[in-house]
Amino acid sequence: MKPFIEEILRNNLKKLEDEHLLITLKILSSSQGPWVEMGGRRVLNLSSNNYLGFNSHPSLIKASIEATEKWGVGSGAVRTIVGTQEIHMELEHELASFKKVGACLVFQSGYATNLGVIQALMTEGDVIISDELNHASIIDGARLSKAKIHVYRHVDMNHLEEKLKEARDLKPGKILLVTDGVFSMDGDIAPLPQITELAERYEAILMVDDAHASGVLGRNGRGTVDHFNLHGRVDIQVGTLSKALGTMGGYVASSQTFVTFLIQKGRPILFSTSHPPGVVAATLVSLKIINSLEGEELIKKLWENTGYFKDNLKNAGFNIGVSQTPITPIMVGDAEVAQKYSSLLLEDGVLALGIGYPTVALGKARIRTIVTSSHTKKDLDLALKTLCKIGRKIGII
Ligand code: PMP
Picture (cartoon, rainbow, N blue to C red):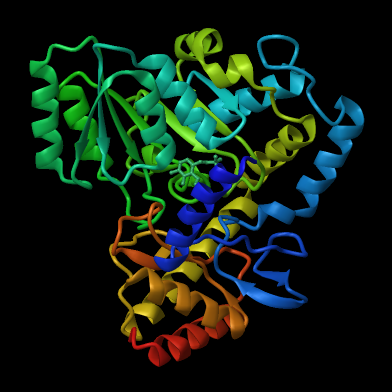
């Protein structure tokens, strides 16, 4: 790198360090799970999205190995050239029946899905209306699309209606109303029944990103649309395979026409190689499990653990914001305090990362925790004891 660029970058990093916002990678020496190995010791993990413990489920691993032997390590091309194997089609078929929609299309990640869908659908002369706490991939997709972007205050339905009226007055080609189903940093659930009514009244296309709701909310983890019984009324659902489903990738669930349209216009589909078959096969097994009694038990356990953990945090005097799901933030405010809290927790064997700007707004730093179905009651008690001990030491409770 040229020296003058190195200097610019170093100054940038120094500023982040001074603001306690410098991100350093946490390196695991083990597979993902309720306990992981880091720096030569086992630590209790409260930071993964491995809701149902699928990241290292033996049946998924077995399926992945068998599919790799049968179909190869890589798919060898983008979907629209020769990167579509029968197994890719089977996954999309299973996802469509899981989500109870006409068709699904799988992308390389949830991030790529939001980018690809919004950019393909929306264009100049259109308006996108977006909750202020929507995921970065929605924001980036909207920015790539060249449509006008109107942001409404978080879950504020009056403000949303104002924005819809403003949009309608512009007489746009299309209006897209987009929201996270479960908000990834606060863990609250979007008021989808009201949002759906408003979308219908103002003839907006409704899109819900259910990355943190799939496998968590609704019957067998079908997501917020199922949770609120809104089947047939949400035009586009986005999900990820990388959280509760335990593997990697994203998908859009909608109509066959929209899927066919995305095959023509979705840039990650046209220009980036499709999934390795092993990942596809493992995901097919996670869907099978989620639809079975084992899946129901795992989701039940996830919610029992969540309730136990949240109740105890609240009783101990922590501010856990507005969370309604397994994503439980411990609100701290100051990035320096969040960073210190997280590193003291790690010294005591608990991995719970501090999250600061730009992932959350300035001054809203927090420790973000997610308990999973794989945590035992003993794990949760240990986590709570450590969170309280260090929390008291640094004056959070
Ligand atoms: N949407 C939301 C709401 C998310 O939380 C995430 C993951 N952080 C994504 C999309 C992106 O998913 P993936 O990790 O599969 O790219």
